[in-house]
Image (cartoon, rainbow, N blue to C red; front, side, top):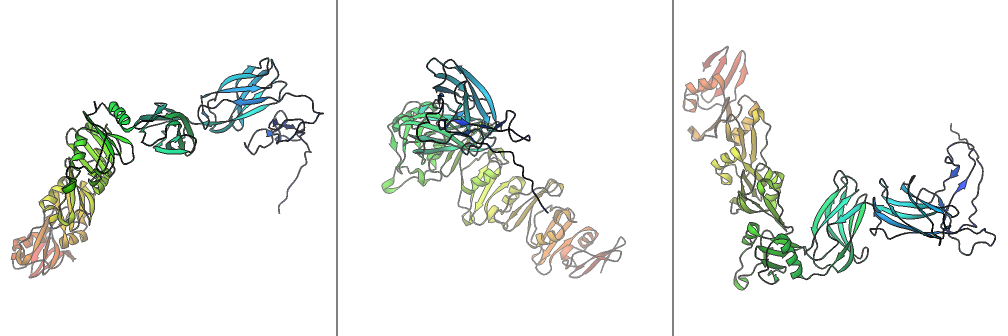
Length: 585
């Protein structure tokens, strides 16, 4: 059972007839209970355009009735904010009013949140009924539409809306094709993704995405970029748009031709004087050479520096043309394409890299410059680039391997790729063993996975098309393949009775047999008997008979339990171990 109690507090009305439209209005009501009005008895009426705050007198067409008493109808205005979308905390905005009572005091408040207003200043109305005052957006102001309210004795209360934004600044207020600018933002939400754009001419007429960045924990970010070609000259704005915040900074685009833009870029990077005119690669993009490098227009129509060892490597991997195209350069025909960044420094050991359409060139003082592309580069990234176990590349990619495979050498090993297996690292002792077995041309083929650690005693293994290589600090690296590996698995791998392998497989036994030794014994295989363990006292007894060459031949079973001991069957008999005594039968 449910019910409700309705209490009637009374009726009230607001008379708008003598108030000009657009003015703030309020009503009072005697409150029989607490909670309906504030401490002054003021009832705040909802404003759908602002959610909270005083009601606004609706539009009224026509003159006020003649019976209305004279009342000043002041006007209020805010100067153009520092940014088109509004103003950030700390920004100065000019507030001006007209139609106020001369000599009266005008006080200003700011809604830092929809329900919290703070004083931000005051002014004395001039003799002509006007005032002008600079106000600052107060600290803690909520981002979004906020009200600036002016109260003055003898005049109606006026409000004006101001959009509060995050802060944005740029290292330059103007620039053109090739200009490098650094954009800094503050008062964004911690961690929010932000797109940095350049809006040219008028809002939304030409919006160019310059890049993306995330705000730091303190709500700030820094993003450096350069301007592409094709921008219309004139007024613009830098606009940082986040998921929860946005900010703007004024900017002017100036006109530059290719030569001017390239010369400015070259000067920034210290490339020296131009050594030729603006030229064009055979597949379409302009460049200009200088004493210490070149400036190249990338596929994205941005300008990038190309210099030193990285430039030499880039040009070296572009295939030479023949026939009618002999002597021409087609960067798109190479493995990299065009640059997409300038050189980026600060890597381990003084390294530098530069990104391209289809990869990168990585340079270090110890290894020189080498390409990094495709699936091998993706694996290199997963292994930690130069900070990982591989370090820097020491060669370019080399192809021609079995089945179309490719490899690249690094300071700490290699990455090997094939169409059938993908790209995988090849390192240390396991790589040495793989080399001993013939690399991809050997019995185990290409690696099919990365090294996997965490085995008993600090062991590591890596899988291959034909088996595995198993390594431990105590035993080194050894192959594990075929039927012998299958039996090894059934016996519990390294955690079983055999432990780790201590040798590779050894062939050439009687009847085509093969064996492999382990810490705890061996696994012996023959075409006639399959693979079986050989360990402990029974193995020692078998050895005394001449192993497979003796009268017992090969084992035909694993070691199994019998009363008070164990036994193992052979082609020519059985060995039993009961109560510490060996019996060969």
